[in-house]
Image (cartoon, rainbow, N blue to C red; front, side):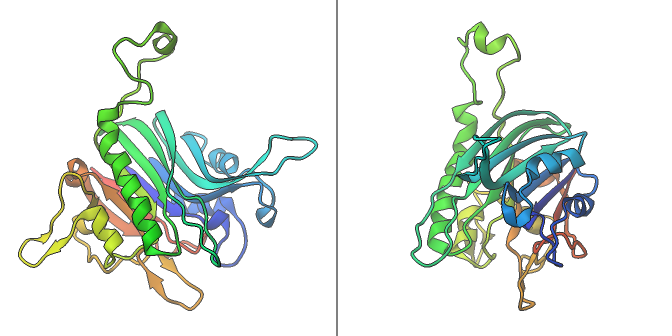
Length: 285
């Protein structure tokens, strides 16, 4: 199974041009695609519906979209039109259910503060039932990200026990006639732009603390960094380059421990030009 995660910077490439077809070319043939910074109806990117445009470029895939930022953008012709910014998931297999989780937000006085979110899709794959999350955490401060990670980890850990979006043995025909009740499987992947480096306290909240004797103390309530599990250096694999030529690893593929043995390989596409981030490519056996 080939999985791609990509912060597409609303389709704006390193040359400053908005080009969704170039984004699709960067992604290539993938079974599951997690995108961040996908927007609708911003004048600076052509007032287009980017989720619809991207979906058209992957006609064999199922897709869902979840906005973090949702603003009025109505016109006389379309009074309900919304200006949105958020995450998208596409899958070769049907998305059985989805939820858009809004994460804690901090109101900074001077700096841009956006409502961040994590989009969840439940997919029945050849590896079995799987939860996939497209995640984008805050870019300004560690304290905000720590609040977001705490909320996110509670969602990830509690979801299997809480059950699918519709659950219960006594569900009426109203809920069961059209389809079986959807599952909420235990295995999960969290893909996206976490806006944090591996040496930070935020990273430890996700994967566990380090110990001089036993190295990483990951528990079953933590996640596994697929990059490290695949045998790569935790400090390598930079995914984002700024205007000063500096780079850092802030895009990740995390998996629940029950998926760790499925991680076959992971890489960064360093040649992609469609965004200020590089696509992250995960291969699961």
